[in-house]
Length: 196
Image (tube, rainbow, N blue to C red):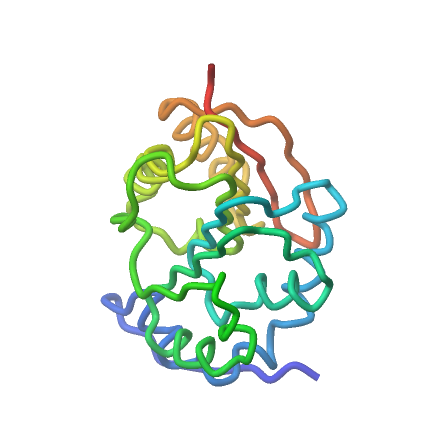
């Protein structure tokens, strides 16, 4: 049975603030749900390779899933997360001792990496928490390699059709093409590449 957390939220509380409150229960509440999304991504043939960036990695459930399922042929895996609470859970996990895994506290709007660094970028269950979506896509464009792949998911919420149209408009304006899309368990997944 899933525990529910009830909080009184004021208008100035950010998603990072909420994750800094709920981080201790995140894995217990969401591991199974997130793992099923990762299985879907892998079934679609989106295998992490080379240099990987996991934007909004949370407690590291994606890299944990990859390692547990021996889908870890990546050269290096960067976990980027703004919430210090989520990072505090992540760094206690034994897989973070793997020298290929690097944990960085930071924001998607200001990626601390040189241009054309990554082969694969994941943003799973992150898009809806972003306030500067256009800026994030500009940063993703800057750090993805020319033939790299980006996987972004959008949650199914009220006004979803508008959200999807807005998302596609932003990524097209920033020079990306959607090469695959799919729906799984209330989340919409998009695979992007840079336009030639």
